Length: 514
View 1 (tube, rainbow, N blue to C red):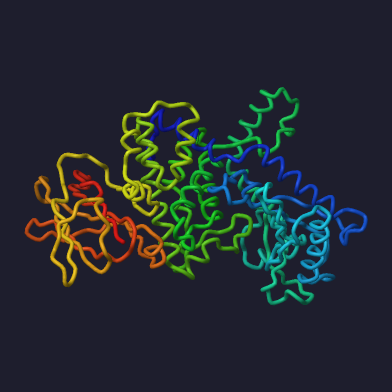
View 2 (cartoon, rainbow, N blue to C red):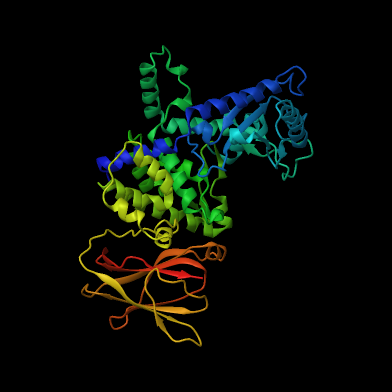
C-alpha cells in the first residue's frame, strides 16, 4: 500500500520541487539560443539553405525535467536536434556531421564563442561562462520509412514510428559510406509518449494557467510554463540520484531509465508527494527480464533497450536496486513526519543540506530545538550523518529497548591497547578496533551493524560501505572488529531488530583516522 504524506511533509515536498525548478528565464534563454541556431542554418549562405531544416529541443528541457545544477561550477545541458530533409542515398553520416560542424564553427565565430567540440554523435557549443550552459547539437535525417519496415520485420509496435530519425555516429560501421543502415533515434516520439503519460493533469494545469493569465488560447501557454507532479517527482528523483552517487558516478542510474520508469508508473496523481510515493512503489514493475536479460524498452522504439548497460555491467543493476530501495525508505519516512526539521534530517544526506534548507525557508517554517542541536554537531559527525551512501533503516522503527556501544578498544602491533571515545583524537592507520555493545532487548532478536566510511581514499578503493551487515550472536555478545584502514571520519552503529521492527539503535560511534 502506498503511504500518504502528512500535510507538513506534502507542503515541504512541494517547496522542495520549487527549489529544484529551473527558472522560467532559463527556459526562455535556451529557447532563444536554439532558435538563433535555426535561423543561422537557414540563412542564405548556409550549407543547408536549400534544405528543409527542423531544429528542436530534446532531453530534460524538452520534457520539463531539467533541474538546477548542484554547484556553482556546473552548467545546464541543452540537447538540440537538427533534422535535415536529406536522403541517405545522397549523404554519408560523416558528410552530414561535417557539414553541421562547418556551420557551427562559423556560428561560434560570429557570436564570439569558443570553437565547437566534435563528439561521436554531436557537436557541443560552449556558451560564455555567465550563460552557464552548453548545447549538444545532433544532426539527423527523417527515417520513418526504414524504421517502419524494420518494425514490420520484427512484428513490433508502430507507435511513434512516423517521428523516427537516422542519426550520425562516428563509431558506426557505415559512418563514412553511403548506406541505408544508420543508427536510429526518436526524440520527438519519446517526448510525445512522455506527455501522453501525463496528458490529463498537464491539460488541466495548462487550462488553469490560461484562465489565470486571461489568454484566449490554451495553446499560447508554452510547455515549460506547466509543471505536473510527474515532472516534479522526476526532478526530485534525479537530484536524489545525483547526490547518492556523487562519490560513485560510474554506478549512477541514467536519467532516461528513471524518467521512463517514472512515466510508466505515474497514475495521474494531482499532488507531488502522491506521485512521488506511488512512482517509487511501482516503477520496478516496468523492468522486464527477457530470457535472462534486463530490459527497459524505449517507448518510441521498442527495439532499443535502455537497460543495456545492466547486462554488460551487473553492478549497475545492483546500484539501481540499492538506489530505489534507499529512495523508497527516505521518502516513506519523510512522508510520515510532522516535524519539518526531522524531514530535513531524513532527506539532506541524499538531496543536499543546502537544497533542503532552501526548501524549508521558502515558507519561513519554524524549526524545532533540534536545529540548534544539529548546528553544534562536530564536523565529523555531520559528515557521517550527511554521507549519501549511508543507507537509511528500512525497518519500521518502534523503540522499545536500548542498545549502546559500551566499549571500543584500539589495538596496534607493538603498542598497548587503548580504550577510545566516540569522535575522539584521530587514530593511526594499520590498527584495529574491537567494539562491544550491550542491549536490554529480550531474546530472540537480530543484530545489524552499519559501518560508514568517508573520504577520498575509501571512495577510490570503492569501500565507502553504508549498508546493514547482519551479525552472528554468540552467547549474547554483540561484538564487532574493524580495521583503521582509511583516513577520514568513519562510524559504526548497532541496530537491534525484533519481529521485523527496529526496536533499538546505538547511534553512530565516530572514529577519526589520520
